[in-house]
Image 1 (tube, helix red, strand yellow):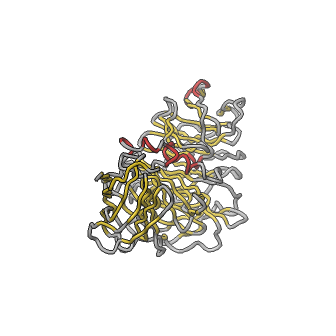
Image 2 (spheres, rainbow, N blue to C red; image 1 turned 90 degrees about the vertical axis):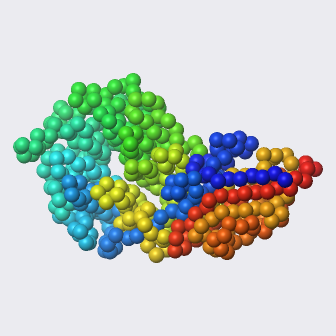
Image 3 (cartoon, helix red, strand yellow; image 1 turned 180 degrees about the vertical axis):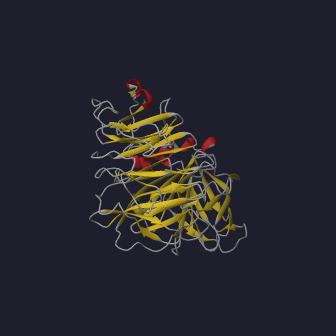
Length: 469
């Protein structure tokens, strides 16, 4: 009798098309082929259902879309600001401590993705349609410290300056901040600008700051810039770029970005490293590459992509989540889109916008604002290390779960024959199966109940039947 055991799953998803079937053993044995709404980090080595979400405040009347989220950071608090669309124009709202409240100044502006940066106690916004504006409290917006008659699409803070760029790659930079005077920065837009290589055939797509390096992205590459010397190093173009500002984020001193094909990380000096290979066949299913949203907190990278179709099944409002600590991927899905994912370092919570609501996601909840959370895991193929030999599973599949009553365990052999049973107690017991095959696929699925379910492991005991003819 041969035995096969899996008790470690910290490698997350390694999709079947990412590695040859007979190479799954060894370093990738602690992975799964597919995971949906489960987490590989909360209980190290085990699989746990993901945490839920809840709506913050009431729905905002008349709003049809969230076009940007940021916050004005202070020593004691973060004042949330959100740019919204009513279908015709954009308006700004802020969180007054108990409700979303309309701001003044930024009203009836043009539609477009809104990008933010903070400097000197003020938050600045651009949208590619209107002039830049700023606010010191989120409640009122004005042109203080901003250039005039200049439409810009991208903005960041770098070495005491505000840096902004339009879509053709012209970069404008303010003076260095002087808090002793008002305005504390000035703009000389006739001279204080430069154009990022107009001959590379790409369009400008965003900024990132990594350490003391400013990265300027186009859709087909990125550059390192030294604004102090008004100089862009042309030899530092790497032939992979980002599709938009929303496809760029920075965490733990590295820049992560989505190129439209895969996901990369870089320190701005070395060539970017592809970290999306293990889920590449799932990334290939992203249908609208211009409508994705990447963000991060201390330990995770998030990429929200809308709906994807896997083997004929539609998974709605999908988020790919990458663990920096374990170098692993999982896939989440929500009953609503969670765009513009935003991390608040003051309360260590993650927020996102959807239509006319703001949600806290990955909070200490077991549902999504009252909606039950389904989960699913498909494990790597089981073959007992003897793929060419026919094996029999006769009441010899043992599973180990907690808080997973009612979940399903399904098994399918290499000829497509399936059997299924259900977890009826918390006991770790063998489940009744009677299948023969050279290899088997096992799936665990269910609905999260009053506690987050945990999958601890699986043991398979085979009766060898010889080589199949």
